[in-house]
Every structure is written in structure tokens, then in C-alpha cells.
Image (cartoon, rainbow, N blue to C red; front, side):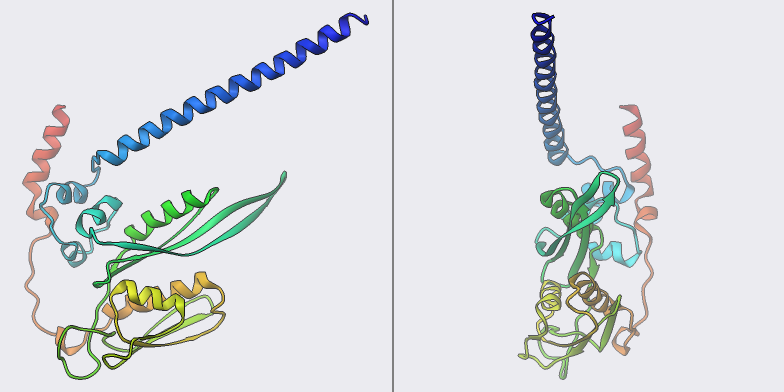
Length: 267
């Protein structure tokens, strides 16, 4: 029995070590295959929506056409093609925890703002197990939520629009953010959080006022984003001109979409 015990322990030990090495090898192999698939997907974009096909084939050349007909953007590559000069800024990364039966599960929540400094801004929030995954997902969500920003003048209408067209307010949780037009040359009189949103949107001069628990950056940045999005919710007299109604892109290029679908079905 004394001789059998060491043999048994060696067998168990060898089996355990072998199984561990085998799992590790398979894990590395799966990781390699996964990375290959992701690279291929990033190189060749095959749109799955009508809007994606029209944008990729050059039928829609401006994102304003999409805003005019309130078409939902489901693929972030649409924004990459129409707005190539977008810049992103990570506003905050915070750990969040969930109590489970095995203990606490920690994940990371990322707030990312994007804009082209020329009237377009977006905000994305994503939670993931890793910081890099959270930032990558937040950038994609920010591109899908990008909105137009209307700019105006404080006094005389000389030069390019430089400030918000009127007083606007945004609210999220207990935080209220108010944007007030400012004279040319004033700059952005704001806290760092709304200042970054206004800068990415292309607003040069603006006064701001905020109330509530502004140390909660998530609510603060959402309130600023909602406020700047409200600039197109007011119809001022300079927008009273008659609108010339045009065809929806889906109707205008319906024949092209049908042909593209038939060609795809053949293959």
C-alpha cells in the first residue's frame, strides 16, 4: 500500500497538470482565431442595412440627409464615412461592482464624447470587464448617438456662428446644465465637463450655469449633452422659410436597393 500511494498521487498530479496545459493551449488557439476574425471584419465592411448600403455606394453623401428624414443609424461605419474628422475624448472611467453569490464582480464603465468641432457631437456610455473593451464600445455607441448642434449669434450676424442660438437647458438626475449665449471672444465659461462637450460641438463662446450634484460626472456630461441637443428644438424666425420637400432616400433609390438585393441573392 505504501508503494501504491505514491503511484496514485503521481497519476493524479500528472493528470491534473496535463489537463491544465491542454486547456491553456486551446485557450490560446481560440484567442488567435478570434483576433483573425476581428481584423477581417474591420478591413471589409459589408453593410446589412439599407442606409449602410446607400452610404457605402456613395448615394448618400452628407449626414444632414440622414437627419432631414430622421433615419436611424444602426452601423457606426456610416458615421465613419460621412464624418471622417471625428475626435474622441474619454471623459471618465469608473469601476462598478455587482454583488454575486461568489463575491463581487467588478467591471469598468467608460464615458466617451466625440465630435468634429463643426456642429456634430455624440456621447457613449459602455460597461465591460476590461477598460479597453469599455472604451471601444463607448466610442461605437457615441458614433451611433451623434446629433447635430445648431449654432447662432449673440449680437450682429457677422462672420460665422459662434455661440448657442438661445438659452437652453438640460437635466439628468439632479444635475441641471444651462447654456447662455455669449459675445464673440468670451470663450467657454464652463466647468471642464461641459467645456469639453461644447468644444467638440464647435461652440466657441458660451456662458454656462449648473446646479445639483455635479460631482456625479456621468449625470453632468449627460445634462450638458441634452442641453446642447436642445438647440434644434426651438424654431426661431430665421427658420420660418418654407421647406422644399424631397423624396426619402429609401424611395429615391428604391430601384437601386432592389437591384442590389437581387444581386446579393444570386451569389
